[in-house]
Length: 117
Image 1 (spheres, rainbow, N blue to C red):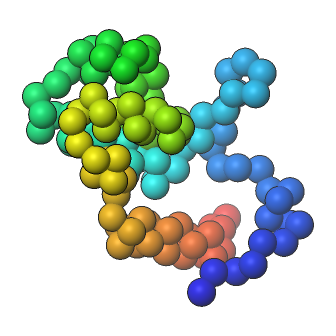
Image 2 (image 1 turned 90 degrees about the horizontal axis):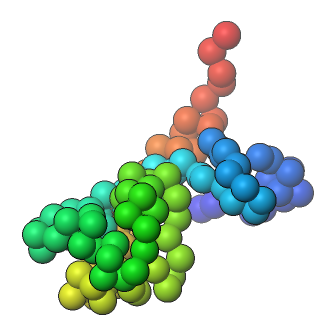
């Protein structure tokens, strides 16, 4: 069971953010890393290079690298374009819920542990 959102949650700064230009944030998240690893795994299984995949979408190769490394979140449209270019279903690029839940549980446990001083 998850805790309901409160105003305190909304005031918290997102973890590991850095800005690059107005309105642009990079968020580091274990779930994004898992998503990026899954995209990379499918790409490699299909024998496609980052350059070829980026060219086929079209997308900047460095942006694709950020997605695969879990440093930025792809949009739904980008996921659909990736699935199309990789000739697979979009759901194949998204990690299984069991994996996501396990990661989220570990994150919650880390947040609950008192900080060591």
